[in-house]
Length: 162
Image 1 (tube, rainbow, N blue to C red):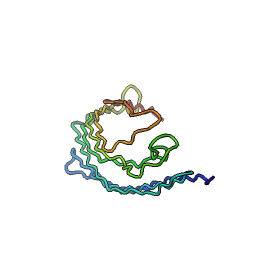
Image 2 (image 1 turned 60 degrees about the vertical axis):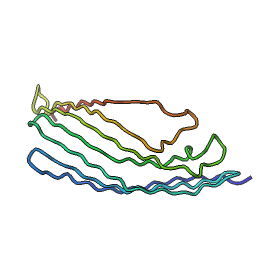
Image 3 (image 1 turned 90 degrees about the vertical axis):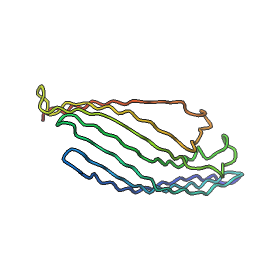
Image 4 (image 1 turned 45 degrees about the horizontal axis):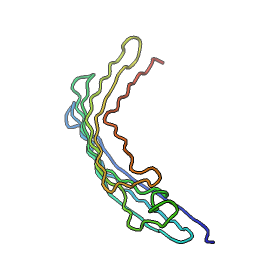
């Protein structure tokens, strides 16, 4: 019987910079390099494969007033397969044609922050609508395709006085 050995390694480096074009309008371009590798050996099969990708992002922020902010962004996505996702079926052969997931995430949002209100330093909220389109979706053989859809996220920020 052959010893089973499974490893997956990911590495990424990114750079972004928020550029103020005016006192109220900012652009944030970004670039990211991704590298992902899997090396798996089972009793009957071997998979030693790597993927790399350069992805880009662009975000815009507009300060409508001192309290209100509008924002939008688009980000290219990359995700290498997890060890479990490299199998064709449970405990069977590896998929030599497996591709990394890629896609595009787009977002629009609004935020509000009030300073020095009701004894607090800051009180605010933000909400973001987003859409994510995936290419080469990696199906999880144990649960099938994930049917999770989230179209809005909200967060509330409350910072008390020190």
